[in-house]
Length: 148
Image (cartoon, rainbow, N blue to C red; front, side, top):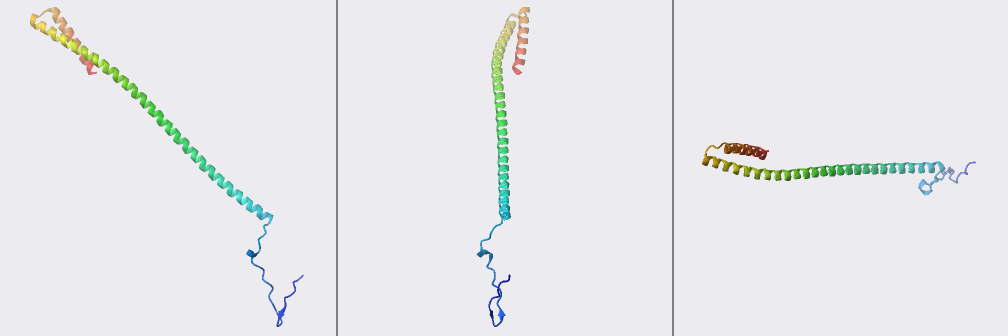
C-alpha cells in the first residue's frame, strides 16, 4: 500500500515528509552487531593482556639477568677475598721466615767476623780457616735465601 498523498496546495503535491535524523532515534543493534562489538572488545582485551604478559615477561627476564649478574659479581668478590686472605697469610709467613733468616744471617756474620779476628790475631790455623770457610758459605747461603 502506498501512503496517501499529502494535501496539495494549488494542485501541487507536497513532498513526502523527511525521515527524522538518525541521532534522533536510538539505533537498534542487531544480534550480529552485538556479537561483532563483543568480539572486537575480546580481541582488544586479548591484545592488552598479551602486551601486559610480554611486559611482565620482559621485566622478569631483566630481573633474572640482573640477579645472575649480581650473584656472579658477589662470587667474583668472594674469590678475590679468598685470594687476598691467602696472599696475606703467605706474606706473613714469608715475613716471619725473613725475620728468622735475617737473625741467622746476623749471627753468622758476627761469627765470621769473630773467626776472622782470631785468624788475624793468631795467624793461619787450619781449624780457624775451616771455620771461616764454613761461616763464609753459611753467610752466602743465608744472603741468597734473604734475596729470595
